[in-house]
Each structure stands twice: as structure tokens, then as C-alpha cells.
Length: 162
Length: 162
Image 1 (cartoon, rainbow over the protein chains, first blue to last red):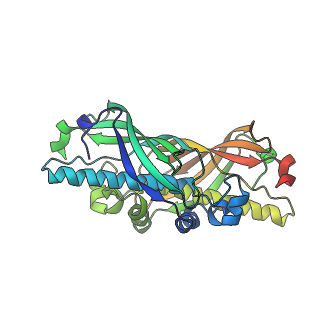
Image 2 (image 1 turned 180 degrees about the horizontal axis):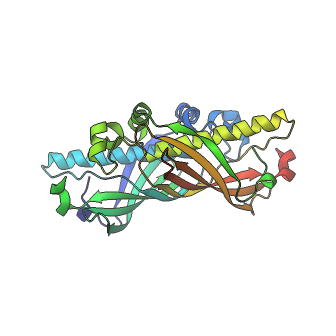
Image 3 (image 1 turned 45 degrees about the vertical axis):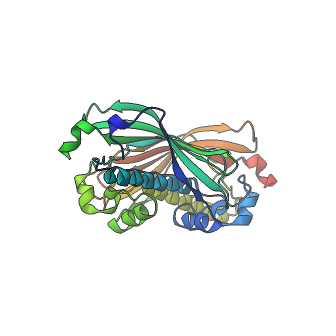
């Protein structure tokens, strides 16, 4: 994970990709979003989605999982180089959460993250605030998911306080 | 579930409540958001959260689950009265997703939904578009979660087309 000072506007990373199988779509839906078009192929086909579709919360949660895994990879690489590791803080919220196209069974979604804005926290000067746009694109190159995420990121100068 | 014509701005419903135990917090985090403050009590205490905290995606997914269950309850009641049942469509997106306060292990969150705006779809005149504010409040009455959700809702006049 980077410290606030190491992050630049426009930095873009590929987070990884995930194939939404019918099985994973139904498993998530049964737990958290048991609407018929997320549970049954035929009901999906009859719906506006046109097929068995992943819950939007499933898509967002998978993006989160890949984002965390990417951060852990970065942290490991930094540790291997003997560098200090930044432990990111929580997120106060996300904006513009958009499910632009359905994610249907069999679709493989590639997720990316791009830094959109940087500012320091007035209330907590030891933290910076990073806004990043997370997006998902399907195997046909169509944008299916987008969200503007905010996160607290530690400033290098404050690292010794932790 | 209501048809578009039956929905009024300002309508507010209690969706239900959920207690985020340490076990459910860790289970979701292991699947979708394995950050240390969502996985371990001690790491949570050392973090900005001040305790083992639920992933924001977990809070959003539980709200979704209660929303769907509430819709299914409404549909069952309408069916028992011999009324036609509206099958809601998908959501194109959510806005202003805010995790206002941490949800810590043991917290019980009550979720509510309130209708904020109504309009008809230009592209798909058989559907209305409803914006609703979903919120979560903890056992101390503090607002912890808020999101502005958009959903496609069938118009009564178009019901026979389905």
C-alpha cells in the first residue's frame, strides 16, 4: 500500500478479473439479494436483464475483494524491498455507484482503479483523503460498473505515530 | 410490492433490523473485504473504527436483503388480498452511499426506506423510476448508513404486458 505522498492523480491500476458463474451469482443472491432475476436463469431471461444477472452488491463486493488483494500485493512487494508499509484507513463513503450494464452468468469482469483527487484531512492531519474511480469492464470491453470511492490514507510524515 | 401509481413521496417503511455479530462480520470480510479491521478484534480496536467493524459492503448487502424480504412480504400480503402483484425491475445505480459511523460487533442496526422522488421512464414508458433513501440506525439511535437508491417499478397500466 502506498502512503498519501506516493499517490498521484491519474494513477491507474488493474485490480484483476473475476468470472461471475451462475453458481457464485446464485450463492450471493441467496444470502443478500434474493430477487428472482438473481436466482433463476429463466426468470433472468424474462427480466430487463435478459439473463441470470449478478446482484449489484455482488459486483461491488467482488471489486472490493480485488482492491484489497491488490493492496496486500503492493504491501508485500514494499516489504520485500525493505520499505515501510502504509496501512490504509476506512472509507467514509462511495459516490456515483452505477451498474451500467447487467453482469450475466459467464461474464468475466476486469476491474480497474484510477486516482481522481487528493486532499489532506482537516480534522485528522495525519491522514490524506484519496478519491478513486473503480470500474469494471466485461469481456466485450463494455463498462458495466463504476463507483467513486473515498479512503483515508496515512501520510508518510505521520507514519511513526502508528 | 407496489405498482408505481401506488407509491407516494415521503412514504417511509421500517425494513427490519439485523445484529452484526463478530462471526457474521468476519465471515463476510473473509469472502469480500479481508481488511484487518474487519477480521480481528484487536486490529479493529487499534484502527480508526475503535473495534471490530463490519465491511461497508456487508452493511449495504444486509440492507438489500431486508429490502427484498420486505418487498416479498408486501407481495404476499397483496396476493392474500387477491390483488395483482407488481414485480420490480433492476436498479441502475445508487448514489450518496455513506457509511456515517462504524458498525461494530454486537451493534443492532434498524433499516428504513423513504421515497424521495418519482418519475416515469422516457425510454421505457411501462416503467416508473423511484428514488428511495435507505438508512440504517444503531441501537443508540445514531444514523450509521445512508444510500439513495434508484429502482425501476412497473406502472399499473402496463401490468398486462408482463
